[in-house]
Image (spheres, rainbow over the protein chains, first blue to last red):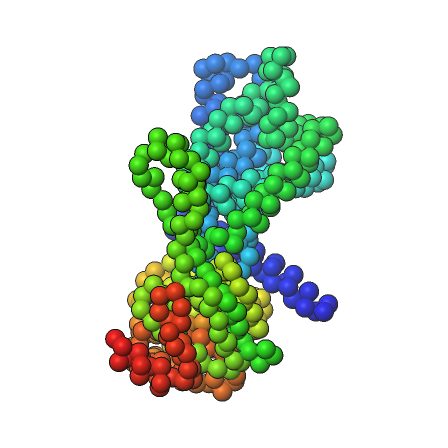
Length: 259
Length: 246
């Protein structure tokens, strides 16, 4: 029995590994710049926001470039995964219709893949820290895994919901892209949460992403984590993941029928 | 029961029909209960209370016209579809033989696709690495194995697909009409391999329109007609009846 379980775990590990490898390989196989793209993309966004808010609007935030990318990189992980999720199952229709392996692995792979891109972009943050005469903090060693885990489950939960539901309700695809775009402006990525007028401050807590982004930025810029926000993030993570799992469980047996 | 690989007991399967609201929204709202009932009720039943048994080590053919539920039966056995009613018992590890290139990624090389496919079919990487060379040998594609499969011809894709499945050591093999693509040489190889499977007591479930292939490899055949099975029995009797009927 024990060796059976061991094989099963080994199999799941291999499945995730091979599927993730596949995605990464496919993504970089035909491009000349390869890995650089996973950094260039968020950096290009950062440049646009820098011009818009620092140069034009003259926002009152110190070291604005650093401030921007510290929030933008984790945001990009969220946005990339969620925006890709409506198409994940559709894109793998041929396998889903024939092979009976657990389908959530396809969704999981997408989240892991974008997580890897985020991790690969952290050196850029370090580079910017040095440019602003700061250094990385030792607290990253536990801070990054802790925030990573919370964000992972939030994203995975949302992706499970969106990917499963989109098969039955294809409008979701457009809706998702719109929602992530709107959410971006309600999340303190390019502004400081202290800039929100006092009477609206509480709305910040309704957005699962804002608590995380604030913490990421604090961690990257000053090496600290707000414990209360962290607790909030983990509550959101547990809740969203649970809902995602339930939606997936309810719908997954119909996937092959509607694809 | 013990020596049965697959048992269908009064299995029904229906699909929902896609709806266009006829008569306009107004009509629907005024007759809401009936409207909802009609939407809920109009399901298309592929088959009703279908019962049969496939013995271990048997090669079982399923024949019939398009749309009578042959592929649905395979989907139910593979566990990708769920029956509306009845019970299905499956004893043994299932290996589906995918149609042309399904499960392959066009940008990956043949070798990478072998690993991808193997993992999707339930093998660990270690188990696949052990077999990779045999698979490549069997497929006869060693010249192209490091090329992306998008440059493969359809025949080459079939070869690769069958070669992977052939080395999975399946207990129940599902084959849905695909052997027609390879050249004669490879078809012969496939049939030989299937004979080998039969010797090793592998259960093969074979859906085909090619009576020639069915007669050549199947022990028993089920003839499906709309909603139910028309006939089930030894190959030559059923195929003969089928041919006369057509």
